[in-house]
Amino acid sequence: MAGTGLGRGIIARTIDGSSLDGLILDGESDRPLYLQLYDGLREMILSGAMSGGTRIPSTRVLSESLGVSRFTVVTAIDQLVAEGYLSSVRGSGTYVETVPRRQTRPSDASAEGKDFPPDRFADKLSRRGQALTWRTSLTLNDGSQHLHMATPDHRLFPVDIWSRLTKEVYAAGDFRIVNYREILRPSLLEEQIARHIAVSRGIRCEPEEVVTTLGAHHAVTLLAELLLDPGDTVAFEEPGMAAIRSIFQSSGCKIEPMHVDASGPDPHTVVNRDVKLAFVTAAKQQPMTIAMPMKRKLEMLHWAADRGTLIIEDDLGSEFRYRGGPIPPLKALDQADQVIYVGAFSMTLLQSLRVGYMIMPRALAEQCRRLIQVRYRALPQFTEQIVGRFIEDGHYVRHLHRMRRIYAKRQNRLLQILRSDFADIFEPPEFASGFYNLCYYKDQPVDEDAILIRCRQNNLGVEQLSYYFANRTSPRKALLVGFAASNEDEIEFATKLLKRCLVAT
Image 1 (tube, rainbow, N blue to C red):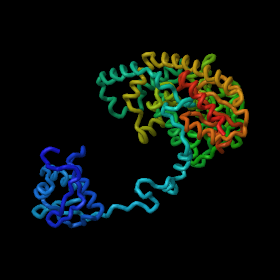
Image 2 (image 1 turned 30 degrees about the vertical axis):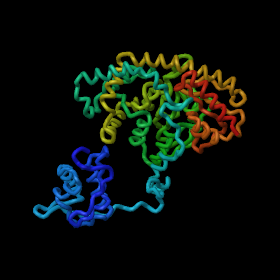
Image 3 (image 1 turned 135 degrees about the vertical axis):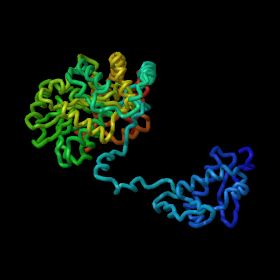
């Protein structure tokens, strides 16, 4: 640094009887000298090298001895005084405060002092924390993996349109949207969702019945907090969405399995009559890809009405049905106001937007808004305005139509490959809605875990069916192979990798 006379690795000497050995100032470092001086003095105080009551040389003496400007020294000293490491006594000088020495690293840390045993805090976790962190092997969901079973293709996102809308929202100059919004009044997004859902899903609702959330998982977390007490019983699909199941388990609820058959979750398999809440995926059962037929939907509604049970319907994947018209959700048939509909834009726009919503009875929606106001505030208003405009101007519907066409072609290509090149490994998979195909192994004694490890090593985002069962064991072993996030060339490349993972010994 010009004017300091410092080179690389200059070490301060003892000054006025105060040992500052080990204090290193590097004039060629990108880190400012005042911060280097601050770091050095702070480290010496915390380590005990400078004990409490030690008098610090004057800023003039330090400046001259270290070859730095007095401003550099004053800035560092003032910061240490402000943080309580030093105290300045008028007319006497500056002294080191008596502070506890920094804790030493535990004996179970590595020699470098950086890594700790992974289970170091295992006994500190609450039962809720244990229920929410049970999975040690996570599927990456960042768009980098081929054949990912739960990721849209972010490359199809209309960036130009989104950028223009973002600029327009900012340019409007409505500075109310930089603050927390008035959550008891419907937002533009909630109004647009009410209009869109009436046409796309046949659900008639008012904007006051729509509550925006930070995604579908956040919606279920809100409902668990609002409706459930420890010990309450929740009927849950078996197999079903493991991450959602863990939300209810972490709330201290009893999970009553609702077994899935050829028509989807069967409420008559629920033994316990005292069920407060039921969770179902009716449009495309996750993971079995079954669309619940009308007869089962009516049975489900009658079953819930008979018990006074509320139903959470997650409409995951309903937008991506590639053959035939849309299938009405449970909520569209709900005459008793007992179904809470959960939707999200994670699969249709960008997952990182974290925008979801619920449609619920108006009185319950008001209570949910109050909970959000206390616990989470609300979805960022800028985001709500942009997504609301995106729907209002017709971009969302056009975007969905385009994605459906592209994804349908990708699934056709994947099915061609699976039915030909994997005929000796998988049973012929069916055409499915959503983002993946369910592929049953012909040879059921396969080592699923070993296959999954090899797939992860080859950057494949497939998943095993057993993951969705409460006991992590599937009666029939299968692999969930995605197609939405990979174009046709990538599908051909990735299926070759998959074949190697499956046939490796």
